[in-house]
Length: 385
Ligand SMILES: [Zn+2]
Image (cartoon, rainbow, N blue to C red; front, side, top):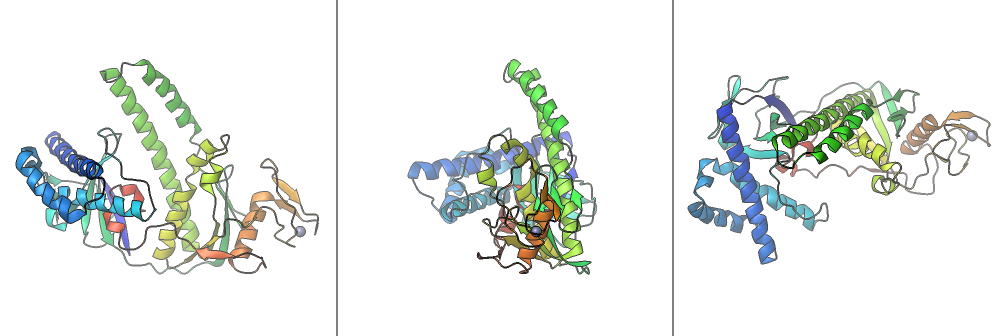
């Protein structure tokens, strides 16, 4: 299986310049090809766009200053974006902007590992901080500059599944807003408190609105906001990684419920809180890690009413208001904590111990199909293991 390994690096000023050129050219090629396809009214295919690029280089001289591999990869990424669009897995490809995340991908013929450094074609040797060793020879590297102006190298590597003995057979996990995850064994996990950082962002947003757009002060405030967003993202990623590793390494079967996130987001009172949680990302991580640890991830059917049944006697008490935390079962008189009861019920349905009229569970389909892994432009699309 493939995974991404991501390392931070600090380029010299000269390297920053060459990297800016590289990102700029990769972005230009993407945007130019996309504009052409839109003008023609159909996607032309990689081969045709590639030969167009060769001709384009004749007239646009500065495209020759960067690695041609990265430009080819830009077109490959465009092809994948279109492919996804045609398969109804995503929206139509969009133009790339200068101010958001920048990235360019180099295949193995355009970079090499040199001792502690990494040689990038036409950039030079950069020295990443090797927080952990690479497990195998990388097949490609994506150079990333995020909106807080941090630089990363993200390698695609082949990893072997790990063999760790599971402590228990199964676990049911109920995802929520107040407690991020309530497990069927009674443990609860709270996500970090992002609220103070979001409050600070709201303050700075007001400040940004008062600044003259494009001025130095405006740019400074924009950067501060971007940095705060990155910090929140790092906190969330860290939390989700740790929790998903813990759950998948300790249990043989992990049962999750399929949350209708898009539907829930329509509730305007909840949408903010939901988008901050990162449920979908959590599920993607669980999926990737169950592969890594050779576990099974079971996703319950979306229509399974997990919070409406007693986990002891299957009594159906119907819909509960969100504020109800403790439930007394009318059937058997048991007193349940709402989330824990749901988690237990999820586990029972997932393990097939609970008779239901509907399909009980299916294997998750959240992550990308095999083969498309090495090719995605944004590093965040592939979980770092
Ligand atoms: Zn009961």
